[in-house]
Amino acid sequence: MIAVKQFVFNPFQENTYVLYQPQGQAVVVDAGCSNDNEVQELIHFVQSQNLTVVRLVNTHCHIDHILGITALKDRFGVKAYAHIDDFPLLQMAPSHAMMFGLYLDTVPTIDETINHNDVIELNGSQLRVIHTPGHSKGGVCLYAENEKFLITGDTLFNLSIGRTDLTGGNYDTLIKSIREQLLVLPDDVIVYPGHGNSTTIGVEKASNPFL
Image 1: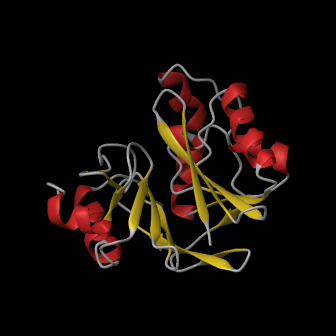
Image 2: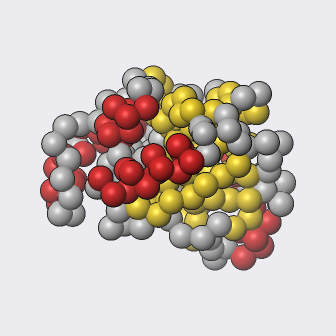
């Protein structure tokens, strides 16, 4: 069974997740660590749980979700993964960081692409990649069917949706992605978003004012 550990990092209060098998492999999703203290907080958890980080995965590549990629790649010696449609956002990362008073001296490197319906293995458990463009062109969610949870990045929030006024955003595309790719999942699937509190598919179907 995959366990979920949530961290809240950087001035944007971004949710970074460690998905892991107890005392086994781990995947870091949306490495938003913006300083050494946040990097060390995540590393301490990994070490305390005797985990082996096997890859970094990004739901999308906006600045608040990529700040820790380089530091964690160096620390764990692993590759970073994202959808190819978000690669242009990486090139804008240093200038975006400056706009928000953050420091990013190099463009984070994504080593491998992930695509719709790819499966990420984690000690025998599986995470399925769901492409959900709209907040960004390359936005994806990660679905653990057996464990009944979904990492949604900035696609779907608790009673809200991702903003669509940033580079690569499109409101109609986002609504289509949510309705056709996410709301078809079982109502009891837990939603872990890129910001804020968790929710469920059922709650969002019944109460999300945007849907």
